[in-house]
Image 1 (cartoon, rainbow, N blue to C red):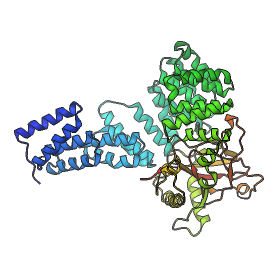
Image 2: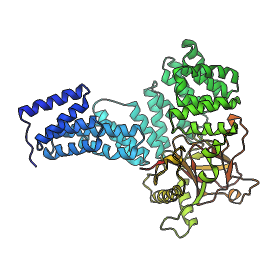
Image 3: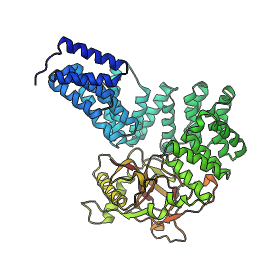
Image 4: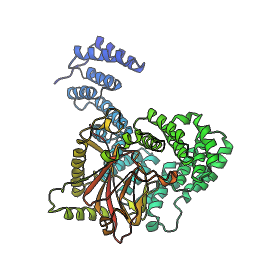
Length: 559
C-alpha cells in the first residue's frame, strides 16, 4: 500500500472535523471523517482522523481498525503510533476502572509496544496483570514504569505503593514491608501507603516485627496532619476494621468539633457508636446522615440497615435495603440485608431470593490429568497452597478467624497445578450453572450465563478452633469453597457436632439477630460448595492438630 497526502480541500475538511471534535460535536466530526475516508481511502491522515472520531464515539473495534489502516499506509510514522497508543491506553484504563482486567490487557500491551516510553500505560498494564494473578509480570511492568519516571526525575507514591502490594502478593513480605516503611517516611501524607503498611504489619508482625502496633506510624502521621482528611478517614476506617471503635470516636472528636454536621464524619461516628452498643446516640446520627447527600448512597444504606437490625427496626432495615438495590441492583450486601429483613418480617420472598436448597450446592470436582487418584491430586495441591501461607494471622476486615489467607489472586500464577485446578473448578461450576432455572426477576438467576469469569481467588488455612465468621462476598455474583484438606475431626464429624461444617443463611453475630442457619453442609475433600454471593455463610469451629485448607473463588457471569 502507498499513502498519499490530502489535497487542500480535503485538508480543510480534516481541520473542520478536528474543530468539531474539540467543540464536542462528535457525530458531525465522525460524519466528516467517514466522508473523507471514502474520498481518500489511501490517505493515512484520513484513517487516523476516523480512528480518533470513532474513539470519541466509543466505537472501540472500529477505531482500532481505522488506526491499523493508517499505520499500514504509513509504517513507522510516529504521530499515528503515538495517537494509537494514547487511544489504546485510555481504553485499557477505562476497562481497568470497571475491573475488566482481561479485556484491558491486550490493549495495554499493544499500547506499550507502540510507545514503550509511556509510563502510565506500563502502570495500567501492571495493575491489570496483577488482578489476573500474574504477579511476576505485574512487577516487571511496574518496575519499568518506575524506571521511566526516574529518568524524567519523577517519583510516584501511587506506583511505589502498587509495587509494595505486588511484592506482598508474591510472598516477598520483608521487601514489601521495607518498601512500605520507606514510602510512609518519604510521603507521610499519602494515606494508601499507611494502609498498606498497617495491613502488612497486621498480618505479618509476629514474624517480621513482633510487638509493634501495626497502626503506630498511621496514628503519628494523623496527629501531625490534622487537616489531611483522606489520612484521617483512612485511619478511622482501618481502626473500625480492627474493631477499635473507641479509638475511632477519639480520632473523630476534634474533626467533628471543627466541622460540625459533616455527614461523612457523622456516619463514621454512628458506626463506632453502634459497635459500642450506644444505639440511641447512633440512631440520631444515622437519621441526620440519611437526610444528607450521603443518605442515598448504597454504602450508607447498608450501614443504616445494619444499625436497624441491631435495634430490631426491621421495617427500617427493609426500607434501606430496598432503596440500596434500587440504586444498585448488583449490590450483594443490599440483597443480603433485604432477604434478612424479609426473613424477620415473615415475608415469603426470603425463600424466593435465597432458595437454599436449589441455589446452594455441593458438587464433586473432576481430577486433573496426570493424577492417579483424588488423594494424590489433593495432597499435591495442598502442599502447593501450604507454601503460600506465609502470614502469621488473618487479614484485617476479612471473615477468617484463627487462620491465614493467601495474598493477591491465586489463579493466574505461573503454576501448572494451579492452572489445572482452575480448569477443573471452572468445568464443575459451569456444569452446575447449566442445571439452574431461569428467572428474569431474580438478582442471581437473571444474570446466569453459560460461563463464568473468576474475579477473585485465594486460599484459607484454618488452624484448630478457627472458623469463618458469617459474611457475604461483595465483589462476587457467585462464590464458592473448594475443600482441599480436612482434618479427621471435620471429615468424621456428625450432624450433632458439625465441626468445620459450612452454614448458610445465618447473619453475623454482631447484628444480634439470633437466627439459626437455614442450611448446613458437611464439607468433603475434593468437593466444591457453591452459592450466590449475597447469601450469608460461615463455618463452625473445629478442634484438630492439622489444618482445614480451602480455595475460595468469586465469580461474575462470563461473556
